[in-house]
Image 1 (cartoon, one colour):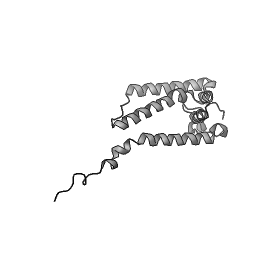
Image 2 (cartoon, helix red, strand yellow):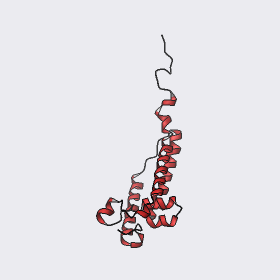
Image 3 (cartoon, one colour):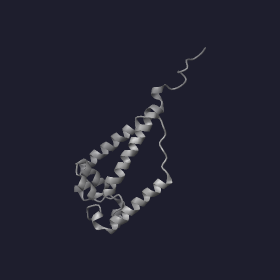
Image 4 (cartoon, helix red, strand yellow):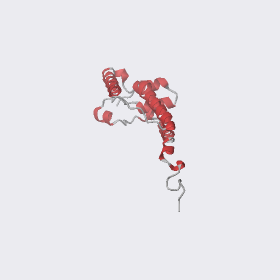
Length: 147
């Protein structure tokens, strides 16, 4: 008695590879929903400090103002977003979009993601450290709110 070739294995429609193709789109939907929630909450109006570093020290961290910048961008206020955190707007956000595009493209073809070199990671950390030092030294580069 012989069994059919496909009965012992999962079909293509149930394979994990097929669902890998939808993962970037699910992540994009989640980020979009979070962005809409931030825009609706209008964190620029609340006056609450959400950053634990800033809450404990009174100093901006390199990412302070990113939530308010995202909300400003959701409302079409580019200059407000730049005022809250320019590194987020001109650096981190474009890198995140690029990384998502590479992920979506590679997941469609089942190719692995490219590795990030140590040199690129070091450069990224140096840029963040320089941004942090600059925004602590130059008051108008802060996150746009006072404690």
